Image (cartoon, rainbow, N blue to C red; front, side):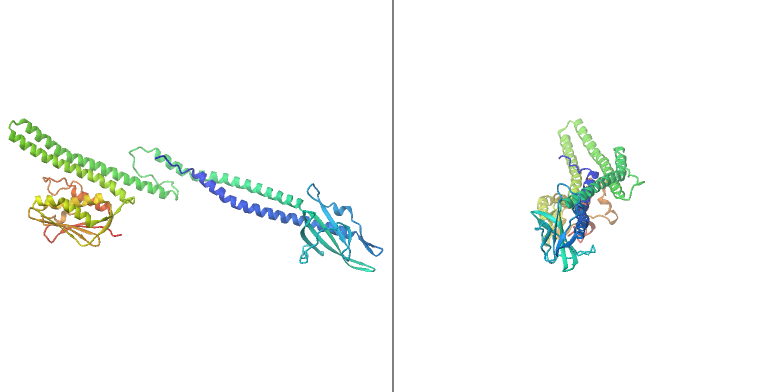
Length: 463
């Protein structure tokens, strides 16, 4: 399986910060544009009103008619360029054209009067000859002999200059904000690099360790955010150390347990080879076969312990399946019935109903086999072994053998513990049962049964 890299923590943090910074940058850009446009409108509206007032100052009457002397300065107050033009219109008291363009758009009737300036002026937007314009309509009082009323002066200016001013403010703002964002990201990069230095030191401390060094990592000068990580690493290291110790002890115990029967088997064969009579050879071969059977049984139990560790990991990682306990016990009882019959033992099964538990079928079979095999091994001929499956998730195995004294019932779950050192067993049967129960989060208890022998109760969790 190819290695999947998670990417750089610094890079992911910077990309996310850049994405987050782009949001206020976009909002700031839109706000800067509208603020710039408002500032441009305010500045150019003031100039429009100044031009209208300059034209109003040039109004006079001649032969009972209103005339307009439009000064050049009234049309030269704008900074003209290739995209800016100004238009004006002067109307008399009856709305007749006095001077200027006659097709400038009039303000809508509901256009409000501005309160920003002490003048009878209204600002509004319109279109003149297919071009968008900004206009001001100024009412100028006229009080002359035979003429009394309001003249109207309209001044219009194309909006190109305003838009350029707004875009300029926008670009200036975006440039400054972008530069500020880059500086912020650079500072964040430096801050993140400084904050990640303890991780680099932790990585160096782990890499510098010897392969057999499983001591906890020191918590000196470890930041609060890294303490849970270091504590988890130390916890994992401690479990790993205990696992290695258990494996080393198990290998030592297994080597000792295998060495003795192998040496006895070799010695028996060597003694048989020295003899010359077929009867001794036959007896030696029978004893060697029995020793080989015991060795095979021991090897199978050792392999079962290895399978238990793998099965326990599978269960812990969510690999448990739904198993019908009564059916499993029934199949095992049928398989061991010939052996029980051969030994003259009555093997009975009592199951109230279907009982489902969560577990690993292979390990559960191993548990059942060891319990029944242990009961058959300690039950004399003519005795009884009873298997019970009770609700909600209780398994019982009872025999009428000699039982186990109360002061030894905890010790029999230890590996290679034997009540009778000269016995044939290896002391692994109940140890295997105990570890399978631990893997399934099941409880196991030993007691004296009603038949007078040993009663084993295994209670599985029902959740």
